[in-house]
Length: 391
Image (cartoon, rainbow, N blue to C red; front, side, top):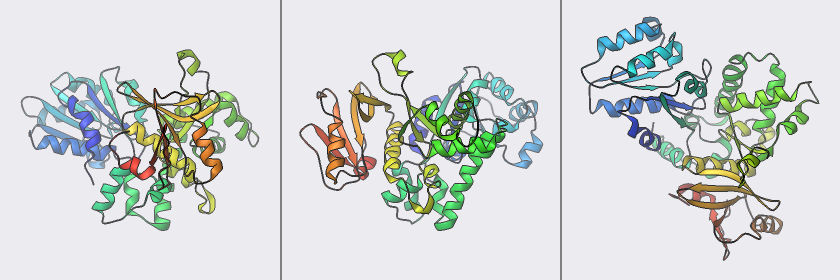
């Protein structure tokens, strides 16, 4: 498995800190792998490292409660700063006490947890502000390419647009690949959400999840979801809101706000939906009729977030621009399309920028090989964007 230096570098400044380091993210995105990589990097500098993997029945049986874990660390640590890694910590009774106690005893604590028992986003609620969290995501293109090379495989951008970046999916092809991704999806939907939140209307929730996960790259409102699913099964708008929040808590979807110069106004707009990984859309597409157009936009969104940009939808006097991306005092207006070879598509995408001055750089990202840049809009090929260092 490749070293995910992007995330390791983010965590590095906090290695000595007494804040609890929480690694969060969607199921099977590689949280445990990053935890092990952190422990390995520290093991080369100190022998005062303890790694406990509570997914192991043997470890759970030996250390079932907070008192057992604390006593184990006390007995096995060396003098000085101890680095304690707790994978799947939710398996321990009163796990919060482990973290709160050890952090006061010259320990640097790192934890992950299984979404089926305690959603990653809920870990932060239980730690009373004494933490710093890091959200891990499935592979972006560069990481996927690096792992593919490690496995001796070649990968196309189209493959990425369809099957996304769940790390282990590169180890499968054909029906095995589909089965693996469907298993991830079912585990997220059933174990992480239906069972975790004790949802009784399972059919309704699955209908909401299917609708939302197939709506990536589209503007949604709770009312539009309600209208789509309530025709088949009676429900309330409040129920729809709760179900979408559950999908967000499990990192299955992310809802992007619309940009406004007035903070209160932002809350009134619809949100644009993006999947935690485009595979969650593709496995819902019948007969291989994959939604490449919207998946491409989803991929650009995930790449921008990965690079540390703050992104919102931009309304240009009624014309939608996919992203206004902000970072380090710079802003970019970004439009995304699969292709602008067709004249209508060309006009639609470029006209979205009409009336805007050049204070912000205007960018169009497509899968086209031809350069369609103009004097005011910079066109970037998708692969070139994914392999670039910055905008």
